Image 1 (tube, rainbow, N blue to C red):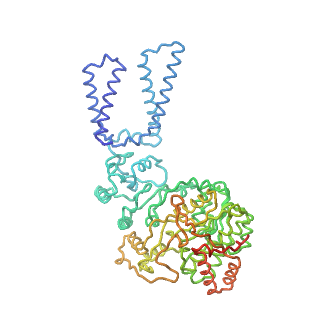
Image 2 (tube, helix red, strand yellow):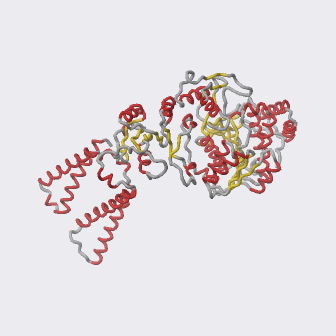
Image 3 (tube, rainbow, N blue to C red):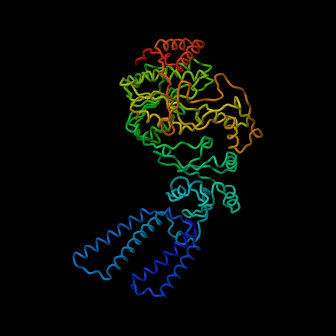
Length: 633
């Protein structure tokens, strides 16, 4: 509602209020011409108060209507009960209905007023609210904060407990709707829309109110500001903040409610927002084991699983330091969570079987892998031993221990693989599926989740570029045309859990590979330029970008669906790459031969056998599908 409409409505209500008051106190006969003049004068006074004190700037839609209606209901029921009791016992109420209506109105007002005063006393702003005529100026003793987000989100944030987390003095709000400019939210003015950002910042600087931080609420579009502008703000010392998420705040006894926006969030697209209920239903009260729990994906899996209340969380990793850090982090955030850390290599089948037999996991998330393309290309035997044989060991142990569900974390590099790493993951997809339950068969339900690059994972391009920028360049990339899919680690893991939850709820085991909605591919050279700009620098002037040439096993582009698969929607954020023909099985003899070559260090033999298996798995002709017996646990 516009400002003038609010003023007119206030005048009408004031005019009506005075007339009703006259009727209640002196009766209908008091409605003579002088009283109407008094009512008009009262309405004019109300208009002057509105304009002087800017009451109309507070949007009506943020008034706590439900609280007011509950108080009115209580007052009405009290009045009706009293009238009924008085009628039954024969007591005549002086004034009749007039008094009852007045009592109802006064009781509602007093109940509301008492609660308003109590809240104002609790928030220690009663005197300020009564005496302040204009929006409160920013406190000079606190860093100033400019809020970016919708008016509803900003009002909810400003209404929250002031003592929660880090303290700032809000100086204004930027909203996504230009029509909200001029509104006042909890004493803080809406200064403009997102498009007015530069003008608003200039006005604040001229007024000596330069913000020390920007708070982005909800899905406030970071991309609308541009990397160059965000980089300039960071160079000027302006902090870019978000509110803590549920996973980040869960279990924390102390700590601010605000946090710095990570570089990965500044680079990524708008994240997919999903209903968390299916994931919680999948995990709550169940025993869950995560392999590779100390890695980038595994540790985030552990965090999000811990937030869903499992009965037991088993963290398994071969890297001592990584395992120690994630176990300690979870112990601090969720001290009551039953958990166990297990130092174990997935290559060790005997040790895995002992662990699974002892822990009896119901859900297994297999994230342990060698994933760096160049290193695995140079060490193909090690890649096979971890990615293929390790996945076989985990699947066999899960089946022997009676696990209900096994989820393998795969990669887009398994599609038409040109690298040893991609080939090992494609074979691993097939191997774990062969240990799964078929129609009415024994074994865990197997889900394979395939997705692209994650921003900020260990050894990924983002931390490499960060290091190169920090030392003054050059930033190196292999080819100007290289494209990759990207998402943040928390979003990737959220979608992995969502995909597994959907698979678990299906009536039949999945036949294909679950893929995550990765958005549009991003050119690596554009990513490099954005990262340079986010440091307040100019690409090719302050930091050189140098092309080095494609490395062995590297492709210009990646895909999530192969030639023998077809994409079909599964749910929001999740697609299934379903096979066009029945998937061929890997004969135990072929797997044993590959294992023997890997253990013997025969790199040539490993590569030849690995890519031969990949070609059979990518077959599009049903008649080529092998029918060899699946390996048994």
